[in-house]
Image (tube, one colour):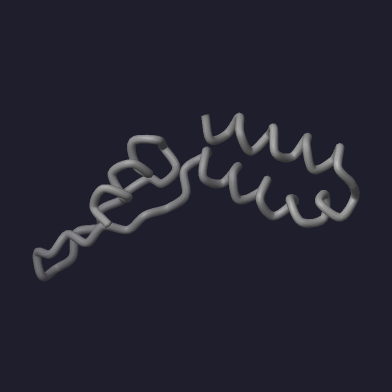
Length: 69
């Protein structure tokens, strides 16, 4: 899990945020980075485009590949 979090953080897919508490603990919360948000947006559009036809699907796959590169 640590390796996955490190890779996602280094790739700017997620952004860690620390929030100190009164007890002295410093929990880490993660939010989507720009790259992660773009990936989710493209992924959400993937299914409707798959139904629309092969060319739409090919275009969407290219977009996903650009984001992941």
